[in-house]
Length: 422
Image 1: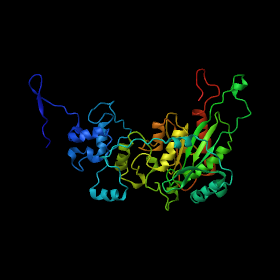
Image 2: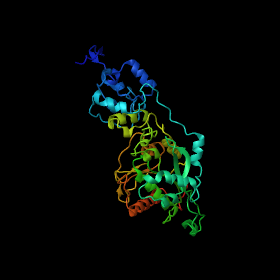
Image 3: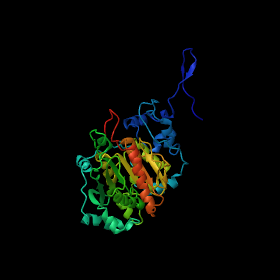
Image 4: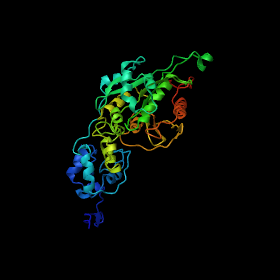
């Protein structure tokens, strides 16, 4: 039975119950002080258990109780702005949890201070901002890229692969494999004058849109890399005029270690899910809790020890910081839907894929790009990870994407008075 609440005399002399701020006051004062010093980012479930008894409660219950208020304060403006609310799954016995925990890389200790967000090195940011030179057709680095990746790319033959003219980015995977990229620059200005020029106004040419296309973040989704490779050819030979030119940057295979593993793996060579390794708000707390409580320590979804702990995620982060894309297209499989995060109205469909927003996840690229960078992120989930859609769908998805970009991203050639041209 719970102990009775202490009483204090009220104005009338009658005993009045003391109102407690909440169950978190049951924590020992030393633990409260430690949590405060750590910025309330501790995620170890035992820190929130009732009475400090192992197995007595769940971290997810505590997160729901805290909501937006600072730990123990109830002040909605004091911090703890979580975007993830976790349900409390059924408890598992230590006998069941122990083997899974033993098989996983050790997660960060709750006693460690939350790591600072890694800063982008100036050299890396300069590289991301620099123009990527396009190798000549038949260049050794392009042939080496195809030699490495081609065995795992559905529907991509050697001629198509070499025509993409992939270049080494200078970055490498966890195992030291090159990360390849390709820039496709806007076509020269059209000979047809703009509408502004035709009516006698000075023609204003807006800067090109910057679009980043990423495939194979998960190594066991090789169709995502194949789609990116096919789209490089479409970008080089545009079939329709856009209101604003586009500078494309393609990274077809962000996770070559996972893609070339036998069997292919979702995670990189360190066992990290790269799509849970980006520095979303409150990552140090939310990502481990999500991994433990919602995925039950699924080794395919380990977010890593710290955000941006992996060379592959750091490379993509540097592109976000330096290239500053107006749009990110992240290609996955096999859910067969279209997902979207960002400030603009989403596309309703790309080819057969219809919009079905899947929610946000701690450490995901969509969450990071939209919340931290303010960039729209279109996530394509192909219907199969090994079997490509037919050619007509590959092209229709591309056409629908361009149509959405023209509607929601492109700058009109005659903007309203007082509207700055992007």
